[in-house]
Length: 106
Image (tube, rainbow, N blue to C red; front, side, top):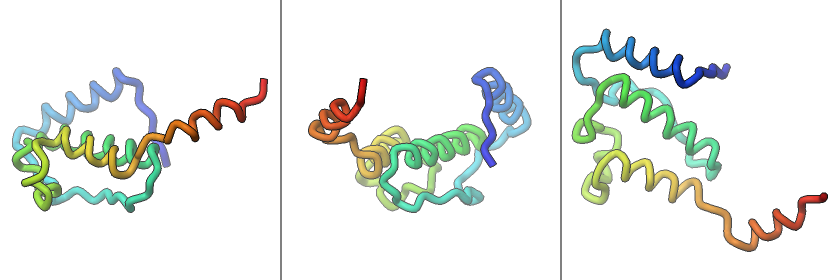
């Protein structure tokens, strides 16, 4: 099941959750998983989920336990999301982009 929100609806939801959540959270109750699939859509979906959870639970970068295994190699949460994109959502090589352009029929 997929749920879509407008930007205004999402911002209102986040503000309501923030007003009811006074403490800071952790990723200990986080249950989403990423299977390592090299799909830009799946990577962006996972990043959206972890970013939303982090925002809703008010988790600071220093408290984000799930990435502590690589903490010496990363600077902050933004660096984690950048590394996820680089590792699992690589850009297409130039020849694939070129071939895709010429595959389009006019």
